[in-house]
Image (cartoon, rainbow, N blue to C red):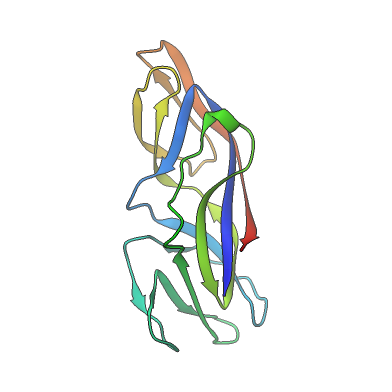
Length: 161
């Protein structure tokens, strides 16, 4: 079992608390820890869906078999870690936003898509349905009278204790 932290970094302009919605579908590239092949497809799972594990008791948010060596692989959101928003206080720094319990696989890439939320850093205006598929987002905060945006998104994974 490996616990992987997902660390997110972006340049926020006049917004803060960037957070995926509760029903967000998380998209990852996965590597089998047995044969070390990386699946070409983006694999997605969310916090709500749980599936029975093939080779043991219990459930996980993602249950699959490696296309190459046929080993069982599972991943689930670490129950003791609450998904966190990305805060403008540490703008352009890596911040941990999620943690996963992985068995038989490692998450090697994350693609933020839709739907995220954020709020105006000065105005508290709520921005919903933010789509980060293109790697950036721009809008206008009517209350503040200023542009808002998200750009230069980077992700990394770290093994956690």
